[in-house]
Amino acid sequence: MVFHDPEGMERLRKATPARIGTGRAGTRPTTREQLQLRLDHAAAVDSVYGSVSSTLLDELELFAVDSEVTDKELYLKRPDLGRQLPESSIRLLRERCIQAPQVQIVVSDGLSADAIESNLRDIYPALLDSLAVHGLTAGTPFFVRKARVGCMNAIGDILEPEVIVMLIGERPGLITSRSMSAYLGYRPRSGMTDSQRMVLSNIHQGGTPPVEAGAHLGSLIARMLELRMSGVGLEL
Image 1 (cartoon, rainbow, N blue to C red):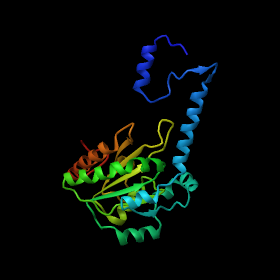
Image 2: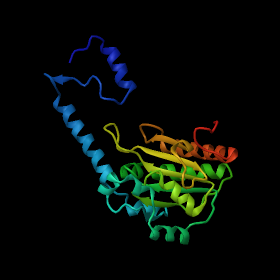
Image 3: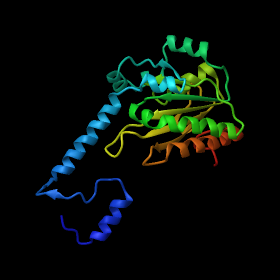
Image 4: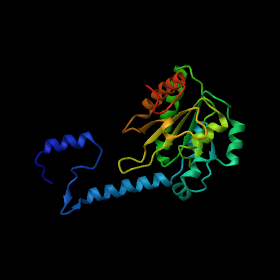
């Protein structure tokens, strides 16, 4: 494919991971581009339907509980169930977790198990180090299978932490299937809305590096505790 400004097109390509200037064969994408698109789409589907390995959870000493979701198809169709915990999970949290911690760390596969597998080994220790630097203490961390962000409210009702930080897999796209988000809430309880939460998104090697994100989260949590709030009203 011939461009009128090849140098300008090359600058655009370097400035974005989006598919631009890929060329075409007649009216269709080139074979190479079409195959790459199918590969990226397959990776996104695999990430949604995948699961986080027990090896990773054992390595980081995270025990696991379930949301009200029983399978991934139900997870996709009933987001409300991903925000709730069954009685068996509630009992386990009460038995194994520190009550009323300063900071409660929660991990979930969410919509991308690949995001957790790819980033958790880096972001988790960086977050713990950052909390220690700021003189903050963490409760008992754990993993929730097939949770939604709103599950923070249910966990807040049970454990009553000052702050929850949830590391969760983002909805994968055709650029990457490995992007993670960190959602934070000050004293999350039933009724907390999205506007009362904070989020650091696009955490992966091609976005915000996970080690850098972990360090920044400690600073953000310290600010939330200082001002006793989170969400749109927090001044950073």
